[in-house]
Amino acid sequence: MSRRLISRSVDLQRLAEDGYHLEVWRGTFLLVRGVPYRTPSGQVRSGTLVSQLELANDVTVKPEQHVAYFVADETPSEADGTPIKHMIAASPQQLADGLVITHTYSSKPPTGYADYQHKMSHYAALFVGPARVADPSATAQVYPLISDAEDETVFLYADTAASRAGIDVINDRLKPYRIGIVGLGGTGSYILDLVAKTPVREIHLFDGDRFIQHNAFRAPGGHAGEDIAAVPQKVAHWGRVYGRLRRGIVEHDGYIDESNAEALRALDFVFLTVDNGAARRLVVTRLEEYQVPFVDVGMGVYEADGALGGLVRTTTSTPEQRQHVHDKNRIPFGGGGADDYSLNVQIADLNALNATLAVIRWKKLVGYYADQEREHHSLYQIGGNNIINEDLG
Image (tube, rainbow, N blue to C red; front, side):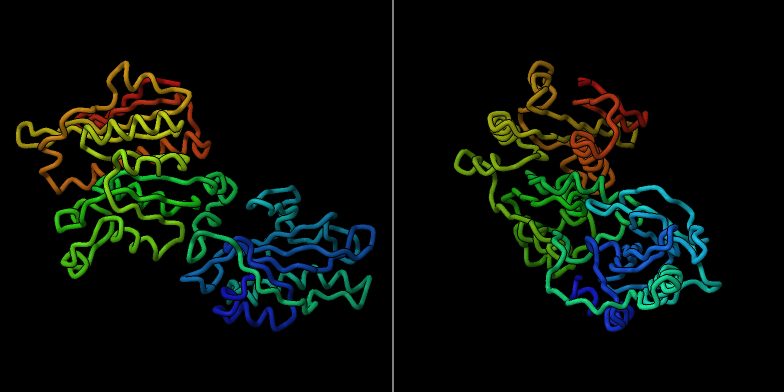
């Protein structure tokens, strides 16, 4: 069991003290192992009771979900051999990596469940009661030896959003990745915000600039005045902000040049968000050499008739499809001088959109999202609210 999580929740402590064999699966599901049940033929066997776990700062809150699950080799039955009446489904379902349930139950008291002690002991009784008719010694209160092992996770508190949505298995596809973000300006910081909330193994931050006042107005979250007054390096600032959420953030304080570009070789995917043409060319050249897939982002914003218009660009390059970048000049390698985008700090919405499109593209590449067109270049037109997909894979 996760002793730290259980020790912080009074209802889980009571369940453990009552002798139930608890386990917190991946921080998002509560398991009670060793629950006896009666088979249709009258034998007594052991199964596992499962519930979604709802937390606030790693402390349980009143369960909103009244459904529970069971893992068993046969269908749990009443004393007369008929299926337990609260069963609503008897088909395997994978809730998370390594967690496959076989039966689903719905039993809701008139006022709901007060806490997880109430919920799990209530459901356990549904199975133990018929089992005791066949074997009076049957009990789910087995008082197991408590180990000190903790679930492995990059997060400092459990990601209960994934379990509530039922997408733990899909989320797991992201776990092995070492992600690089080159450039932590407006778009890069929003990419970090989105990627930090995925279970990727590591996030490498590359930037040599400082976090100053105008950065706060095109970046996610609210930043304290004293933090801005300290003029921290961007990698240190963002490492501290997202270090409150997760582990695995690696800071590379400095711009990428010939002396340190080798650090890109160990990455599985890179988001490139710089507006300096020479730096962009160097990074693209190295990523192609190292066979690392990447997404490069950018935008061109102009003023017309007192309003801003323009394009938001997302360009993908993978070892299987790279030539479009060069043949069609998809990524600009020139200048990087002043324009409306670099001067106007009040367009965080475009930064966030550019970041979102880039992260969605990465998730498509790894099979997280469906990808019918496999576009490797897309443009969002602000005025027409259109997205044009090109360079289809």
